[in-house]
Length: 185
Image 1 (cartoon, one colour):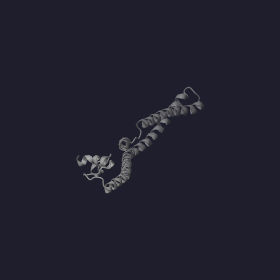
Image 2 (tube, helix red, strand yellow):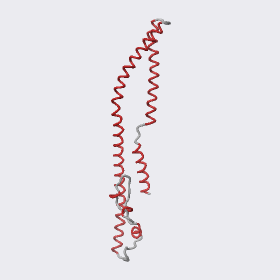
Image 3 (tube, one colour):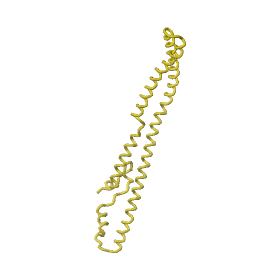
Image 4 (cartoon, helix red, strand yellow):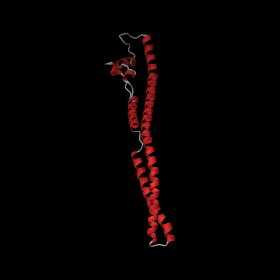
């Protein structure tokens, strides 16, 4: 068995620094209390085997805790990097969106005033000025309100559909969960 075949590999770990896996034959002999290298039944060996057993379980638990801690730290780092990428895209485009929204609001206001004036003039052909003064702005407000509502609904559903998901982090967490499940069982 080569050295690199005997190392534990965890997601994101460098195989060169992973702790070595114990030799299965040696573990088997230790669990059966069979001395190694042909020595038979000596009290010193039994004490050594008992000491190895006693410290192997705490060492396994400590290694598992250390590896889990490292895994969590790596996941947090990945989430930070991914969130910085998302926030960078949002920041770069937010200024353009803000300027465009301000200019668009001015244009919309001019359009509303023009529509109100045109509708008032049209209503004056058939209705009295008292009714035209309040009816034209009401119709313009209802039409533009419905258009605004439709655009907002479309935008929110598109955001919900796409969302701001941390896809890389989620995939990595699924892999880590599977790795941990295999490791524990």
